[in-house]
Length: 129
Length: 153
Image (cartoon, rainbow over all chains, first blue to last red; front, side, top):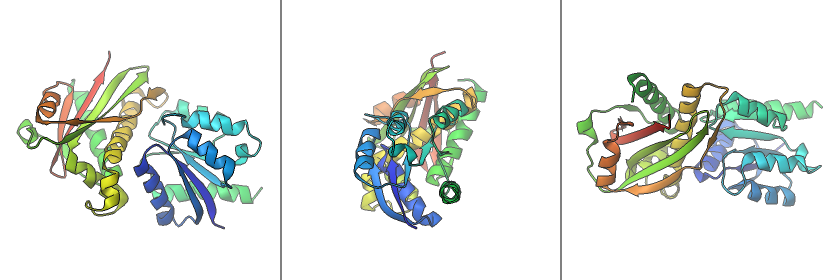
């Protein structure tokens, strides 16, 4: 089943890399949405069906943490798995994000194999529910 | 800057540029780093937490396109690489900053990072950055690169 994916990052090059990684990793993507910050992402989420969100933390206008908090306040949006993709390596930050309900954390730079494994774990987990 | 920190920063930067942009870096002698053009790009960001400070990378403008091309897997004259050239050096800085802070402060320490900002440097700006004691010079695939790292200790 192809997944509708939203990639949220203020860096266009990172959005392009993540998009390319889906192809390299053989992840079937239906519609690919892109947003440059959390505010744009919430608008997309409120108007489209999205199966999976890849998001950076550190972005202008609205960062990833605030976006996740707003998603948690919405009955439907809080069910969408969020994978945080960031350069930060602090375990404290990762724990903070996990407590907010993120599904996984990927540190940049990443490999297609790692992205594939993370997506498989999340989607496989959902299928098994 | 102490020798140990300089060595650590060098290793982390070379590892980050290799993994993220598929380019190979090595420490350079000063003679290899004198300005040869007037077109350089400087990306800079700050961090706050247990330690505060700033980190910057300066590269020749042309190198930004090559970084973007390598990251995207296209030719350096590809339109996409040209459009994303500035974005790519910001992201190299972002990746390097994350790796440096973890290596220096440990995995538990939390930092707030600023959004990377870029500015243009001419030859005199490049030389000014080169002359700072906190700057380390590299050759990355034959391009001169300056890495500046400063802690407000």
